[in-house]
Amino acid sequence: MNNPTLFQTRWNLRALAGCNLLALGLLCFWLWPFGQILCLTFDDWLFHLLNRPLADNPIWLHMWAVASLRPFDVVVGVIMLALLIKGDWVFEATQVRRALFGFLAILLLLVVIRALFSKLTAAMGWQHNSPSMVFEDAIHLSDFFPGLEKTWELKDRSSQSFPGDHASVLLIWGMFMSVFSRTIGQKVVIWGLTLLFMMPRLVAGAHWGQDDYIGGLLLAFLALGWGYYTPFAAKVSGALMRVTAPIFSLLQRLPLVSRMSVVRG
Image (cartoon, rainbow, N blue to C red; front, side, top):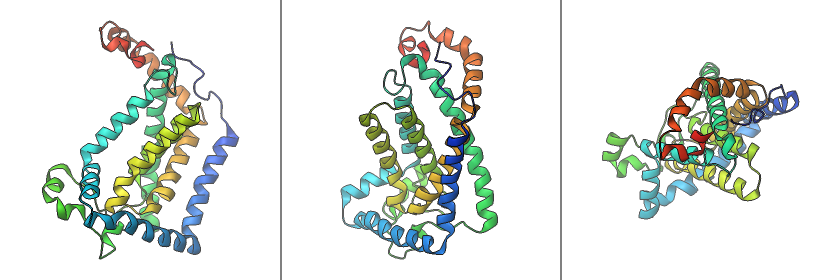
């Protein structure tokens, strides 16, 4: 059975405080007038650096148009899941199932924190339009591919772009995997994919950079702190292990499925 000590069984108050202080520090920096100027200046440069080539480079245009479609988010999710449950990569084969359940618990906590923070954002008037709705010279992917926008929901604008919920999911996955990764190579792959999959919304102008490196990162720190550095992930993953044990016992009888690390457990 999976390693029962994979997650914290006691409160790690120092790490929890660190995650909360980092989240609070990001928010304070963003609310500080000079910090806001720095963010807007950087985001202006970043948006035009990534968005402007869409008008001149067909390869760049088509690549990010595909990556900005909602179905591509499913592809990203499958890749993230595959790496998480790949036995003997970041997690040992006997740890994979518990690791998956622990991550799902932290992801659920992220959703709750995101909902609460969104209410605070609305109440405080922190919400804003995406850069594609602010800059007159913005290149809109939907103008080039109107059919894709109608059929597959091409994401290139938002009237409520803060915080970056898409980025927060990628960042919590990156943080979670990094906590357990053992080599530099693993960390390079994890963070390379995390940053790569954050790019489509930035290129298309659906999010400002600050939506991700302030808002998304803030949410991820809070979810990691309260999910991993408390007994939360340990308790939820343990409960799911017990509840799903009969199901996985049945799956172990299937020829191909039984070879998966998450099933062998």
